[in-house]
Every structure is written in structure tokens, then in C-alpha cells.
Image (cartoon, rainbow, N blue to C red; front, top):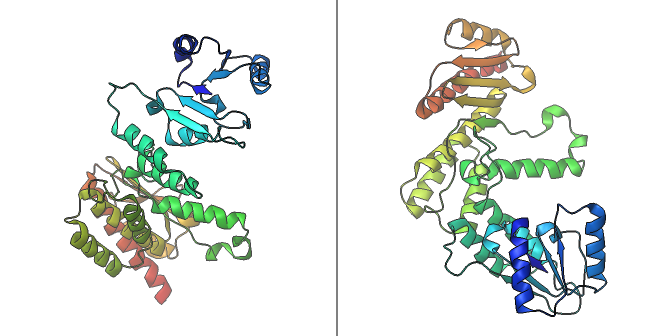
Length: 339
């Protein structure tokens, strides 16, 4: 296989291959070919009527050609880590040893992410490499901005704990473990979006396994005392906490407060804040209405049963307002429990 990142690269690469190996029979395959034509090309290559298949990354999955033992990737720096891993898996599937060559222009300066991807590819050579790949890919590319305002696709904006919780929930659902429990007994995770970066910066903790371990520990913090101890430990090990780490610890604390108050979703931005109760119900509705009466003009209950605060807020004000509102909701909820 000879794989290029773009269809427009194929003509030039075909000329280079023909010049280097003039006796080779070269076939071309890409996504713009008609399905019947693509099938014909692939069948002929599989039958040995062509020596080289020049293609885009459409060959990265679904192919099992044990006779193919060599892969040449042109401009490997333009491929994602998952794509490179899948492409590498196309060769060496038979008894012959496979060879994968990742190339890029000698004078081309690689971006930081591209250099990381290519470095990681050199280390993925053992059983269980798929999990290692996923861990590196999450750190380089991200799992999506699950908490913030933007869908940036960077774990740097999120932290990994919510992603892990969602994954655990999905696995539990597939195993039908939760089908035996009532809705009230099921675990749930509040969704918090404050539009601020929550992460452990790479330049603060450089070692990936250590960062992932810290994310797991932070996601499991169960009290303010544990959070304070975690912060003190990180200061002792790595130095003064960056703003992003302080935000991460603050969001984890807010999550606990949301669970205690029954707040399923908290969203805030420059223009205000919205809180949604789990199941659109609050444990002490009378107390809530009474408290809202003392905050007329500041916070209101919308017809869709969500609490809304409409005013301009910077990042610090969002955190402070969220803490204050959740503290009051917890106090009101505890009044109902005491009664």
C-alpha cells in the first residue's frame, strides 16, 4: 500500500512511484470512485494483478489482504493517531513480516501534536496497545468539550473524569446492571458548563500516566476536605496550582453540591446562568418559592422549571454565583429533610 492524505496528492505520487519502480503495476483507489469501479480495483489488487495500491486512507479498515506486507504513508504528519494505527494494521496480517514506513518532508517543521503522534506510533508494539493509543489520543486530540461552551474537541477544556463516568455508565447499561435498580438509586453525574478551562496542563504535569491518574483521583473526590488535601498534595509535588487546575477542583466541588441539591445541569456564560433540577423537581418546592421571593429580580423560576439568572458575569462571578446559589438550594433541601 502507498497511502496519501489527499486525492490531489495521488497524481504526483503516482509519477514518483513510476519513476522509482518503472516495472510496477500501480492501481489507484479513493473515495470519489464509483462503488463498482472501486470494487473492481480492490478485487484486482487482491488477485495480484497490481503490485502497488496507491490510495487515500479509505484502506484503513475493513481490508484483510495477508499477501500485503509493506505500507508507505506519505505525509504521515497529516494523519490522526487513530488513522495511523489503523493503517499500520493493514500489513503483516499473514505469515510475512509487515513493514510500515511513515514519511514527511525532510525540511518540514512538524507541529507539536504531529510530532507526538509519530512518536507514539513508535511505541505501540505490544498487546494492549489499543488502550495506550486511546490514552495518548485523548491527551493529544481530546474527547470533546463536554462541559464548556465550545465543542473544541480538547480534553484540555474538560478533564477526563466526566468522560470516564459516562463510559462507565454506558458499560453498566450494556451489562444490564442498572435494570435491577430503581431510577432513584441510579448513579448520575451533574453536567456543568461554565465556559472556563478545566484541566491539568501538560507543562504542569508532563508525564501522561501521572496526569491520567490525577484526573481519576480528582474525579473521585468525595468531600471538601479531600479536595483541599488533593490541592495541597499537587502543590507539594508539582508547585503552585495553575488557574486551570484551580478551576478543575472548583468544578468537581460544584458537582458534589449539584448532586446534593438535585441539580442535574448548570450552565453559565457571560450573560447569565441556568440551573435545571433532576426530573424538573425539587425536594422542597415551598421553601424554594419562598427563597425566590426574597431574590426578586435576581433569580427566577421559568415556566420550564429551570432557575435563571440574567446578568453579565465574568468567570470569577460565575464560580461565585454558582457556589452561592447551590449553597442556598442545599440549605432549603435540608430544611425539607429535617421536617
